[in-house]
Length: 340
Image (cartoon, rainbow, N blue to C red; front, side, top):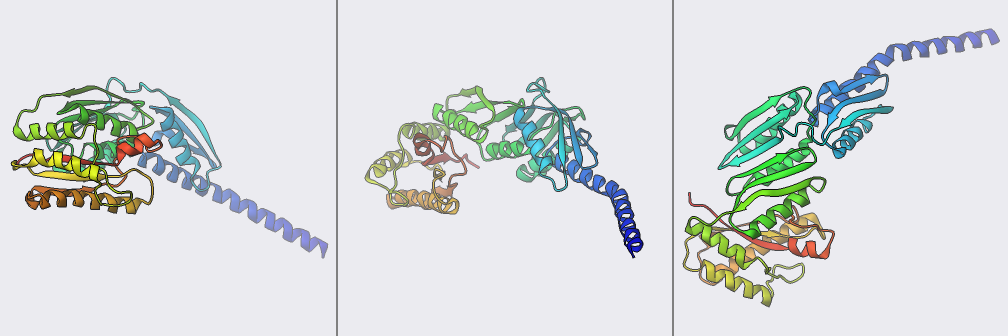
């Protein structure tokens, strides 16, 4: 009896060993496939990933410590991965002579730089989905040895450029973002740099390439006047409401005087800080923009001259962690539309 039990146990041990022996390659291949897919989806090259058993080794160059941490966490979070062997090299100046550049000129976006094949495909997909396939010029050089680029950052860069008037360029050097272009006012420059720093807190943001140029036509002159009027003033609303305060009405009267007698079409954009419910902030920002439009229409301006939009807390220009920053983010902006 005891012998039968021992033979039975031995059989089970052998069977288990065979299952582990034959199953190990499949487990390793599954981990490799998912690790490579995760890395390439994030814009890194497949050659950076190697797998032994359930251990994943990452090699190659990334452009910043933040990039390194992000890639390591992505792989470590995969189901079945036992250990991640970090062999990554951080070089903030990798590819610095050829940064990843996004240049907006009119309705055309040009991509330029040196990236991996996987990142190249993802970049084009993202850019064309935002700008339209016919409006994207691809000047990217594909290089397997290029550092990995964070495609989340690319999406934010595309969003920043979308809807901006005038020509604007963003050059991404791994740990540094340089912005260039022409703006109509110092307030416009301040708002753009504030938004860049808020959207990319992990990067050093430089606006040395931004210049303020004189307005060249009546519409640009009106934009400059509106920016100057709101440089040190805000349109106040009752807390949590779209009712304009007495102080807010004074500001609106000043804006109204600038708009009166002009044919320009204007977008009124409402913004909030990040306090409170996200959906509630979106709705509140839209209602406040509509309230400003209603104030102008009640004063006799044609409703057809105004469009409204509400962005809630999605487009901050300052740090929401401070009372001063939250105050700056609670704002109403006026964007004069160019003639068709």
